[in-house]
Image (cartoon, rainbow, N blue to C red; front, side, top):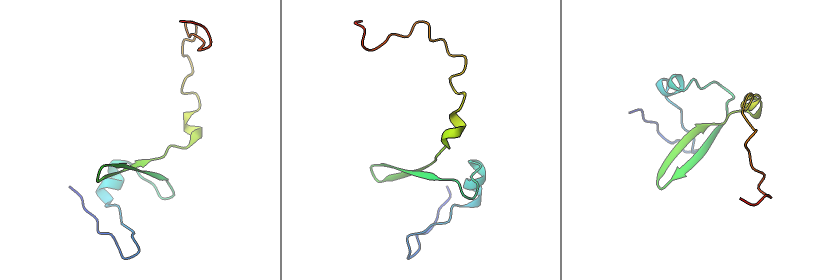
Length: 69
């Protein structure tokens, strides 16, 4: 388990092993997700990285929500 100490300015340094494990690079954004007293740091993917995500998806049998079931 890696640890970090909170500075007087409430800053922390992410340990090198953790940065390397998630391939974190300078300038990347992280989201803070609270679950009880646990804090999760989640890398925020740029919206451009989602381009083409649904390419090739079959939309033939998709129901419009305005139609009755």
